[in-house]
Length: 290
Image (cartoon, rainbow, N blue to C red; front, top):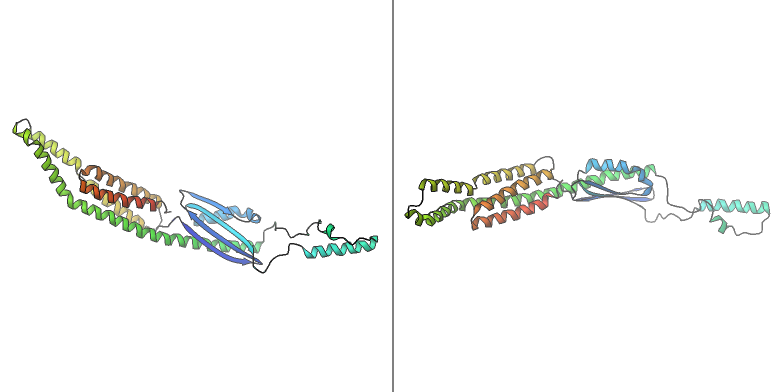
């Protein structure tokens, strides 16, 4: 079963007053390229996440994004009110003890530690557990997406292969007439020389056989059919192997090109062009397979 390198997966959940979103998306790449975007508080989990992603993603340029936002309606105050109240009470007591006259404590309190609710600097174990669960869900959805895209690619491959086979059948139908036409042209061109007695018939027949063998495409047709069959078998393998399919496409292209160069026939060349067009589309699709 082939799988596409293009994929997308997303999972959302909540932890406390925070909404967490995990996204995984990928594009084509010869290797596995991971780009992680996670909150700075979880930077120490980078390697752990990379290992988990690597187990589920073989190839592709992958973006992994973790977003943490507050749940709507659960806005956190910018000030630590409990701390401010404590500071104020301490200043009030101090004023009585020292018999101070000023009551303007707020400007002083706002410069003291822990008054503002700054971004958290320590990881929350419960929140991290939620991220782990969401990561697995997002990766599953991501791989399901790849499998679905792979099925669509397989159908497209089957259509392209069918087109190449159909063109090959048409070439086989017109090939006998091509050989007869070539023989006829050669004999006609040599009629005048034959009358003059300047031609060694045995030598001519040897050269004719050599020439016919040189333009014969029987072996190329056999190999082309074999490569097409091998490609189809590889499509149905349990493992997805885009590189292997790419190599088979190269062999298919080699046989098609040889048929075109040997053909020396306008009608056959037309079908060769059709096969090359189908194969070019297969190359583009194969580049998107794991």
